[in-house]
Length: 276
Image 1 (spheres, rainbow, N blue to C red):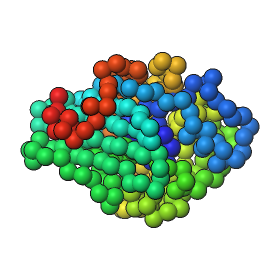
Image 2: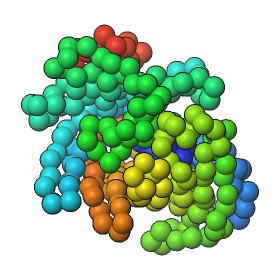
Image 3: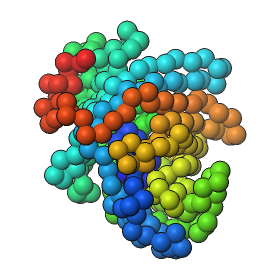
Image 4: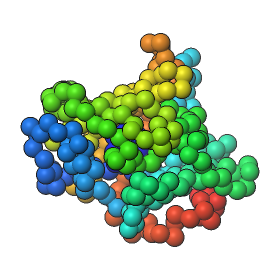
């Protein structure tokens, strides 16, 4: 990923859960001013199951040097949460590197994540204290790959109507209210533009505690897949003292839901360690 914009991906995803909302499921007025109700609607939006995707992940440093990696991603809902598997396809030096995430709806439970590095021939569990760190040298953290529990955050409506392009949005601030949220995400606060039509984030700004940096994430090329609004381009960049340190672009070339080849057997440590 990656439902909630606090980590953001939701990152519609987050980040890489790639969740969206069909207008037919929207149950909130565009005139709503209660930030908690708005976020509850975002959390309750219709979500695609049995997701399969292929994406290019391009990282650019401050000197303009780029490196691109191709990733295959799979997602599956289960009673009580969601599983996500990402495996690097290319280039050769990272092929079969993978991340397995298990997100629990119960905010009292720690989400599980395992990183597999082929050179070590085993998977390693990511601890809570490591989740704010960079995922594979990108501008996304391990925490960005999981879904945040709204009960760990305090929401404030900053503006009832704000524009991203021609699209009307709510501008909502989120601040962690538990040590768990502060430690795992490493964020002091976030502000997000939430589309009133689609109930997904279009743009998010995040204040990073470590290094006093800012992170910006933009979600673009949003279109419906199986009736679900889904971003096909995600741009994240890290800024310090007004200068861009690095940026990461995710470009989805293949994305589908309800894929019959996606099943529970894919989301185990043994499967993670087998690679492609």
